[in-house]
Length: 98
Image (cartoon, rainbow, N blue to C red; front, side):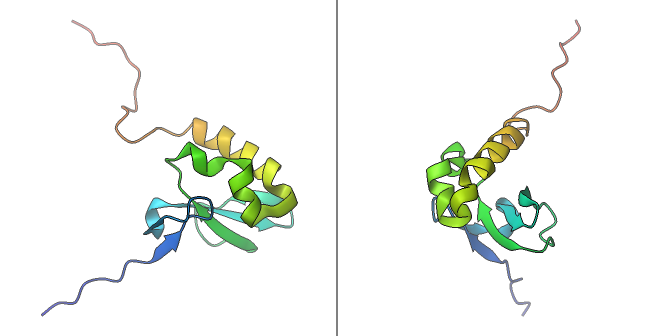
C-alpha cells in the first residue's frame, strides 16, 4: 500500500493560518533588509505570509516578524503582490475579435 507523500505545512506570520508551504510566500530579513524569497533558499530569518490575503501584508501584522523593518516590508509586499495575477484572472487582456 503506497504511503501519502508528506506535504510541509507552514504558518502565516500575520494571520496564523496553517497552509501547505507551496501556497505561502516566504519573506526573509537578510543583511540587505526584507526580501521576497521565491526559492526558499535565501539566508536570513524567514517567515511566510499569505499572498492572496491583503490583510496579511499589513504593517501592524508584520511587526511580529520584522520589528522596526515592518513598514519597509509591508510596502515592498504591497507593491510586489499588487502586480501578481490573482487566482481565476486571465493572463491576457486582449480584446476578443469577431
